[in-house]
Image 1 (cartoon, rainbow, N blue to C red):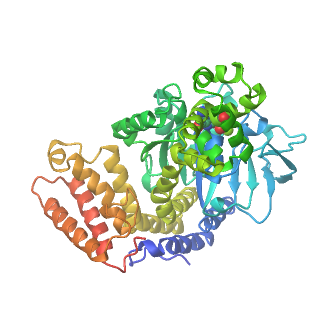
Image 2 (cartoon, protein in one colour):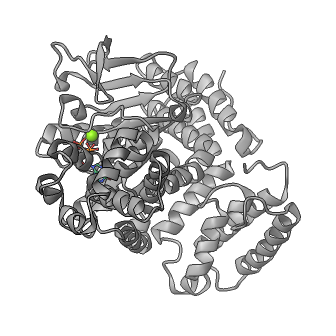
Image 3 (tube, rainbow, N blue to C red):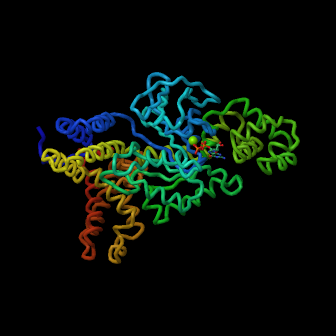
Length: 508
Ligand SMILES: Nc1nc2c(ncn2[C@@H]2O[C@H](COP(=O)(O)OP(=O)(O)OP(=O)(O)O)[C@@H](O)[C@H]2O)c(=O)[nH]1
Ligand SMILES: [Mg+2]
């Protein structure tokens, strides 16, 4: 029996339950061909958030994924497996499976080569495999499944197409990823076009809700000088303010994945080699560190082979940083150097960002993905009255769940659509827009993050600041020059502030 739209407005805490109930109802009415997709989407509500790592060939995708897992599971060389979309997910045992286009799932034997999981494809070619799944018991994978995608825009049109099909499946099915990290070394037109084509489904179509731009291999910017990461941060800050990019992804941050990976896996023997290099004397060091080429081939007491491994592992920037840190005695042990690498790499900032932007929105992102799949299935038979009733329930949830509304409002603000006319621009000035974005949960959804206060702030201060914001925005919403569009953003934000003020509204 299919019920019509419910009268109760779904709050954030029971959003998933509402969506689950709707999907269970749908399963009693949809046809057999749509069933598997809806069943999969239903099961997905209880699974970890899926984050895909995407970008151009050799942008550093697999290395960044490794840095996020804290292991070296993803192969970073040019093997066959880098051409297949590969999922890294938590599980009870170590295993690799291949999904074949026939629907068959086949377990593959695998070995670890320099840490990387290398499946034995046997008779299979990369082209025969729809996807690989590496199941790995690892704490970081418990809350997030990471998906490595083949490089876009590669010389191999097929490999590129495989990533496009995965990330932008088009009208016929919803995307498999809840969120995407898009890596670019330097942004140019192709990258922007790719981001534009990453339309997500359902409630926030074609919006930056679930994309984060990463300025990758940031240590290589500006000739690998020691200030490379600062230079990269300045470039990222410019991208963040670029209206075109603001409309396409939530933010842009610089990360040196290689350094983060090196920090997570640094060996004592590598540290000892770096100490030997450092101790080879300042004059010699100047020559040695002039370029990667020279570092490997300049005459030195440390063997060429060892130096080759060091440059491969840490990059020229990493070696320069290590030598500077060891020579100045800022770093005295392998553990301290590992920490230095991780700190400088930007990975901690990225992890925080993922927790704030995606972690706190996990429920909404998963619910949105599930509704997108359900909508697609129901639209196969749009004239069916039971389908129409279910579609109305989807509309109802999407319209009333405030967390969805926040996502839509954030996207519209970022796309620049809201403050497009002159009077709105006068009222919604840049600082006001930034505050509204923050209040809507753009920097994280806890009350203190929404109000821009420290995490350990006194609850009385939270209330005081929230009341103050409520007062200001209420005055703004009743301003005579307020247009309908801008007013709906302000009233939506007021509703978010009321969520902070009313403890029963769960914003955590
Ligand atoms: N200096 C530096 N090199 C990096 C960084 N990330 C990756 N690399 C190097 O860039 C090359 C490509 O890295 P991958 O992680 O395989 O890049 P990818 O985007 O997965 O490549 P494909 O899957 O082949 O498209 C490797 O030689 C890495 O060591 C980084 O942050 N800094
Ligand atoms: Mg790769």
